[in-house]
Length: 272
Image (cartoon, rainbow, N blue to C red; front, top):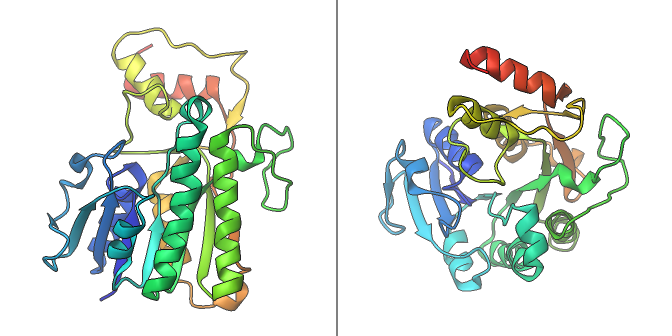
């Protein structure tokens, strides 16, 4: 039975990874400061204090706290690094905090992982690294063009993981997520995914604003597929095939316009 650390494990994606690991018999340790995550996301799991040796251990703490990270990384074989400050607007308002969490938090996690002998880190990177380039589809070899402190911080974190792979032999994989949706996604925040925003507005009888003509497309990815990608990256045995800090896109590979999305959600909900 392996033990894994999930940073940001009380969040939308992290809690789904935790559920999948528990279901297959692994032990899970969650580190989360609950600034955006919620213990409600963990109610389907058996959660206990950090030192009780149960299937799921919960440690409340800041990803940028080196002491907390050393404790969290103790006796784990791998880390799913989901913790982040994910709001683009907030990163523009407070870039220092965005970099403290997304860059320095990643650096301190790498230091703690190295100290504790962790074998592998799978990192939640972002398709925001590509910016608004018109070229489609987005492929990993495209030049990066971050447009916010959030995007540039995620890109800097990718570079840190690549450096630790080259310098210290830590196996690292960076998964660039595209527009994830699914159960437990917050629907009450202006920074949440457009699917949740559309669904909530339609159910409440509110008008939905779509900027432009609605023809702009997105790659929407169901959360279970993101979980499978994370587990595959963690479980991969042919590590020689991975470049240091290998970057891999995680998406459906299908484009859906916002207008098509709105109409489909309206149809499924029977409203609009």
